[in-house]
Length: 328
Image 1 (cartoon, rainbow, N blue to C red):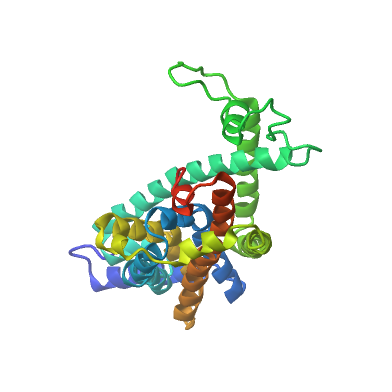
Image 2: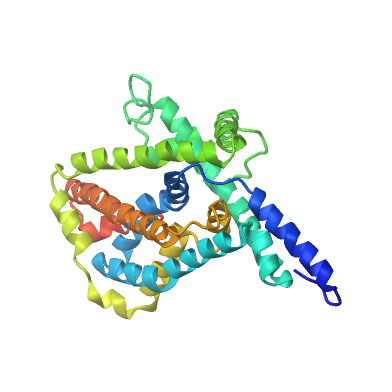
């Protein structure tokens, strides 16, 4: 950004430095790496965990209508705009906003802070998953009632995995060794994925994106064979139109797609800046990423609600009650 009072020579030198920096920026090894990295960025727990919960809470198919509307009117335009900015300026979020208007650099720093906060949250969740993954290799699952003295899965999670203090107790400051090791393992794997640069990350993304899709397909194939699965699916795809007249349904739908596609975090700007300046398939890539992210959510809903229908039948409860239970 040129300063007031600068001579034409100063401006030309400054612009030359910016062009040089952009031209020296490393580029993607392939188009597929870029798509997979941003798909891995967008697709996550929110698609398979939070989206079905929101559907159960806000009228099944009615929530999907509000969700798709919010996708086209809010999240998709923001996401596409970010990738265009990154491609145009060939810089990360801070450099991009600084070149647009210097005082806007603070916007980029806010997104960086948000990313760091959210990352610590996700790393903790992955640490819990690591513990369950390791313990699942036991001959008998340790959270089965027969193995943990008749405890529920919730009791096992709170008492054994977290070693959480009871409500009203002060607890303590002792480090939980199992949780600490699991968390360090997650951070170490994250470091390995990042230390090799974006091209290594792009290759890893093929596995981290496609393997969960394979697992979801396997879960879906099993879930649809369960007794009562059709009742759950029927609730999932049947809209309760009364929910569309409620503001909280639209608010929840907008927050869900923003949470899932995650525009305004700076990642799309950074990733798209590694394209060649002449790259002309950015719009098509965006459409693939956006459609795959939404498709994963919708398909995951069929698997989840098949299981919800089965659980509702086993417990003798309405599907709606089971679907909206718990925390999303």
